[in-house]
Image (cartoon, rainbow, N blue to C red):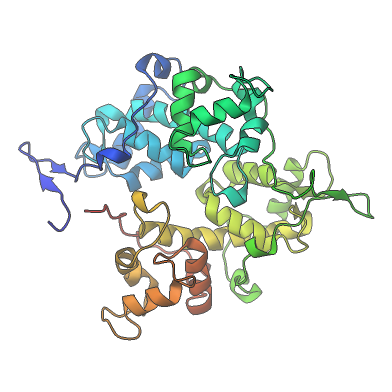
Length: 405
């Protein structure tokens, strides 16, 4: 039918079940979850649930769950581990988290977030969250028990084990299943040691150098990865920030512990998580990073930081609109139905098949003619055609994400 949802015999709304293929087949055991030390008690967690469950129906949608993470657990605000925890915790397959599932869900989020942070340290931005052999080698010392040899137990052999679908890269789902099977206790504890910096792909050993001024210069990001259409200074100046330039620079200086005047992507990420948790989304953060790195060093310098924060807010506003039009099976790809879903919020898109209709606008957005609109393509179309959309704070709630049916 139109939605695949129904009212159950108990009178409660029942969402269409998630496709079985999307639910994790290997999940952490109750024994492992019980070892996790939580910063909030079960009672405090349930109080957060009840505050969010404004209509008192006893369950939260994914969008509502996301709000509880952003406001109460900002350090866990990563989409992929959140989705994996959501699917693993939805015990009765309703597509919602019920009140009695919520505390287990939070433990799942913390568990998968710990795995995500390790996995992510082994990827690079060009991989789009795909772990390669070099990446596994980079994080192997933190996993433990992986030998630096070509024999069984070496990086290559473990990579082959992890790569269950033999696609030549390890997906986050595959990494989770291997870790849960072989290192189940890793994500049950808080790790004090800092994870390694993300690697940058390069044709030589590092591609980096010391500049004439004595400062470290990272290999420039490939030109193809830098946004070709970015918001103008006029648009960025319209954005109302919650922190002044002086407050932002103070955050920069606190993070720049060695005083060298620039921050790496990992350091930048920390400033977002701790000071701007509502903007903690990887894709808009990366787009802002690349658009703000004016001299192409691969770092954000002190004089670029406030502009960078404005860029982050701009791209986050676009991301929240874009994401509302996608579904989890799309893996952040916007389809025609998704654009139709968010078109009223974009404005000026007619409900017709003529020029100016959803289909015609979709064709414009889909610059590479791949049949889906990537976030990069969405950004470029919005900046060109609706540049002011992301300069203001929108009071109206965005629509719920759709479920394929």
